Image 1 (cartoon, one colour):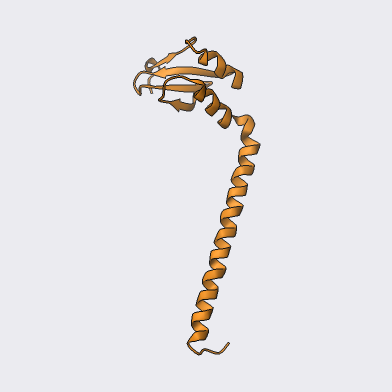
Image 2 (cartoon, one colour; image 1 turned 120 degrees about the vertical axis):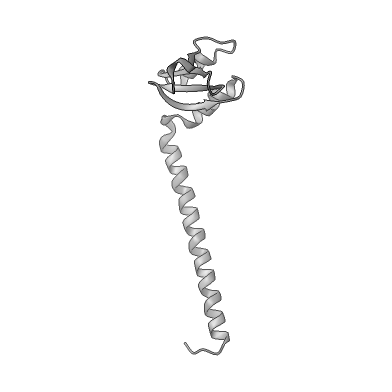
Length: 110
């Protein structure tokens, strides 16, 4: 990516450029001319892209994904993984039961 395609936005009508710094002081708002989108960057690294008009929704999204929420997000991921594991085990037990029932219904001895 050429830096010439990026234009830093230092002020805007809704003060979004200032408000993103409330989430993280190192966040900076840019407009990418080549991609026709907004970008929030931290130390030059891309954090989030935004194709909608600037609004408070961008601030909300940044707060949802900010690194300070990482523990909460990790717990959420762990809960979802545990739920998926339990569902998988449940399906496996059901399948084993079906196979066993089919085997026994053909007159096999256990």
